[in-house]
Structures are given as C-alpha cells and as structure tokens.
Length: 82
Image (cartoon, rainbow, N blue to C red; front, top):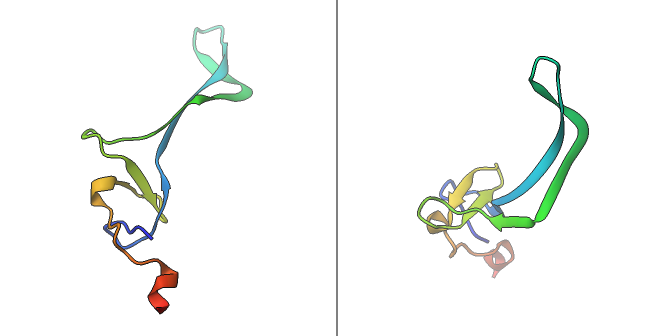
C-alpha cells in the first residue's frame, strides 16, 4: 500500500479528461448551459502531472500528491500480520 505524506493510503491517480457541454445564447449576449449534459472525450484521458513532470496521485481524503512525495515502501495491510 502506498502512503501519502499525511499517512493516508493512496487510492487513485489524478486524471484529466476534456469534455464539451452545449450552451444557449441569450438575448443579452450571455449564455447558459442548455441542460444536455457533458459529452466526455474519453480519448483525451491522461494522468495529471505537476509542473516538474511528477505523476499525481490522490489519497483517501482527496488530497493530491506528487509521485516523489509518496512512500512506496509502506507494507500492505495483509503483510502486517506476518
């Protein structure tokens, strides 16, 4: 089990996915969402990286951490009983 610096388990990767959502143009020139929902472009899915190129991961509280910050040596829970 990988651990974040705060001691919580790393449970996910941080991802970026593009999408588009329909709009309606109003008489005053502004817009509002048309309620059609978001069309997700799954082909754009990619793991996020920080400014230094480190992959980003997420802990159980939703905090994001760079790969270089994660403790990858933490034993798995089932290994703790050995």
